[in-house]
Length: 144
Image 1 (cartoon, rainbow, N blue to C red):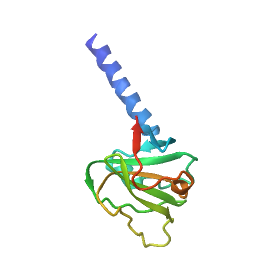
Image 2 (tube, helix red, strand yellow):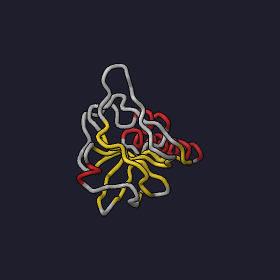
Image 3 (cartoon, rainbow, N blue to C red):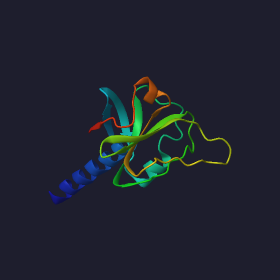
Image 4 (spheres, rainbow, N blue to C red):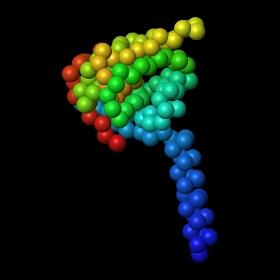
C-alpha cells in the first residue's frame, strides 16, 4: 500500500511540475477597470527571460514581475521582438511608466529602471498605457 501511495504521489508531483513548466502561473492585473491577463515571472530564470523570444503579445496580455522588497530593479530588452510599456509599481500604485521601450539592436542592451524603488513591474504592449489612459498614481489590483 505504501508503494502505491508513493508512486501516486510522485506521479502527481511530476504532472504538476510539467503542467506549470508548460503553463506559467497566471493572474489578472486591473488598472482603471481595464484587465490584463498576465504571466507571473516568479523565478530568477523567468525574470531574466521575461517576454523574450516571443514574436508578439496578445492584446490585453502582459507579464508581471513581483519582488519581495522595493528596489530599483533594471530591465532590458534582450531577445525581444516587439516594443513594450513598462509600468513600475510600488505598494499597488503606479510610480513610473517607461513608454514605447524599443527592441534592442546590436550588442548594446540598454537597461531601464524606475525613478524610485518598486516592488512590481508590469510589461504590456507598447502604447497600451496611452490608449488605456494609465498614469502615475493609478491603483493596481492583482487577482490571482
